[in-house]
Amino acid sequence: MRNRNALALLALLVGCAGGEPAETKPVETAEPVVEAPKEEPKPEAKVDLAAMPEAERVAWLMKRGEEVYKTGGTGGVACSSCHQETGMGVPGAFPPLVGQKDLMGDCVHHAGLVVHGLSGEITVNGEKFNGAMPAQGNLPDEEIAAVITYARNSWGNAFGNCLPEDVAKARGLPAPVLK
Image (cartoon, rainbow, N blue to C red; front, side, top):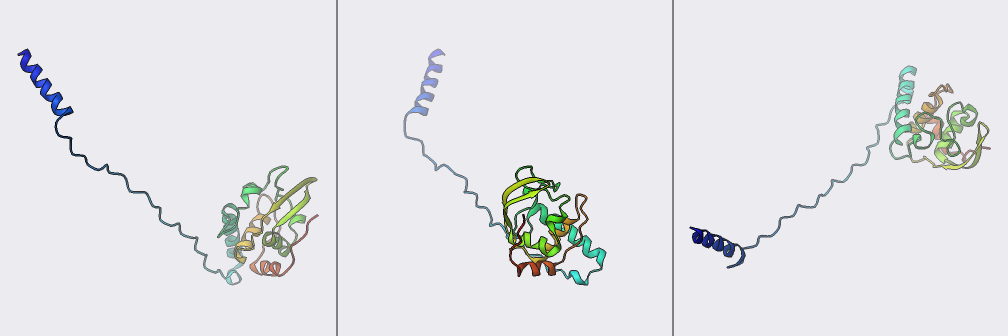
């Protein structure tokens, strides 16, 4: 019996290790993952703000303004990246928007800051800032009007609403200078 088991074991070992080589099959590899191209954000349909009742216009500007402030809209840089969602900025790096009526100025001036950007030293609340705010002139007038309306009326600010016509005027003016 012992010999029979030894022979069976020997046959098994020879069968596994020797004899004809086993047929090899190609190793299956996973197909490379190809991501679908990302869709570009579709421009929002033009909104006729002038035809809206005042309350509806303000609601639209504030809602769209908040979206643009937080996301950058249809191709801009999100304002909240620097000025923070609270509008308080970052001490020593990015100025606050809270309580800055004089800095923002009227709607055309404020739109000009967004359209043309800003660089160089400014003083806000007695603190010096020397950075750069990128120009956002690639955004549509409606988005810029919305985001500046949002900033002018958030975090306790109550500085009035702006319209796309204000932005159009700012585009035709030189970049505002702040001191």
